[in-house]
Length: 84
Length: 375
Image (tube, rainbow over all chains, first blue to last red; front, side, top):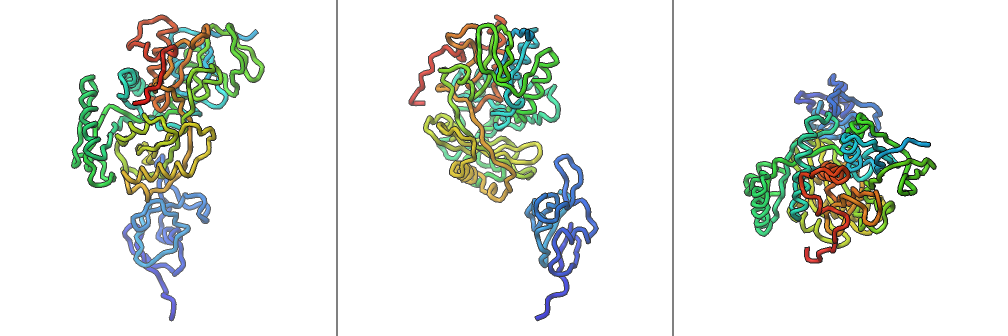
């Protein structure tokens, strides 16, 4: 059976299609967002290490806050929210 | 020859720094000796809950007096002190505890402390993440939350503005009538000595009846709005009263960052600072009984600290029995943040022979501290 060519998800309410296996972090960058979250002082933060260590890329995935977007693959119908 | 000080204080926790400021403001030449960092011991480990308590009349008097002093301090406290008047909700788990809610409200109101009874509906509305079906609680709006290590640093700086000297990285190794010797060999001449070393104070004043009571705490990632008030189960009273070796109680506190601080545990006889899995587990299971949603939150850090416990749950403020020119400001158990400011006033009142705002007799170290086995 052929692999589906794309996976559709929503980032901040906007539909996006990416290749299967794309991480949520990559999808967010493709969607053009750089502020993944806000620090405690309100400054914008984005992915740094890309391997789940630095926790800078955290976003809300399907309502669960503080998900490390670099460690999660995009799934069909996923709801992602940045900027929290 | 080193400079001579009117007073040398051992310990730069919140009690030692508060005492330093009070004595320095009165014109005394003060030195503070601290082996580690300012506010780095139990001061940094605690919750920072400024709370009026009513285990005894003496405890009420000191916590109530201190809370008024905290309200004055809040006006000058820098933002890093994270002072927020959140109020406490004492959560009742059953109708028996609702009786205690009503007793507590009457007690507080009779003494000028605002306290409102929340019924089941009002409690659920105030804290939607509490488990459904709780009968109610007591809301005490005057209680607040601070970040104690930063407050201690602020008090120390204010004391230094009044001429106090901080001697960090050294401990007191010997105490004589006219001076102390420090761990680096320095001799510091002095008039009087104040032991504010918390759970380590018996090392400097053996036989004073202070014992280490270990506690665990945990802080989550940021979940703004998950908890709104400082929450404490009313069963906490049973736990804090209990002199058995181990107990836990539900405590949850919202930090200004959106993080949730979760406690609490009490252990006698545990000397090591390591986080103990069985205590952490018991503490979190208790917390989740009250707030099931806590189980979904991510933890950032867990740690422990040592309360300086006395047999009658009141601090030691005043002359060290049988020791000339030596004073104690220790034994604050789980209320040291709250009562630090009142302690400093009462200690200075005794040293300077001022008229105190509240009677200091209940806290004199020379009192009888027979433990009431029925408490």
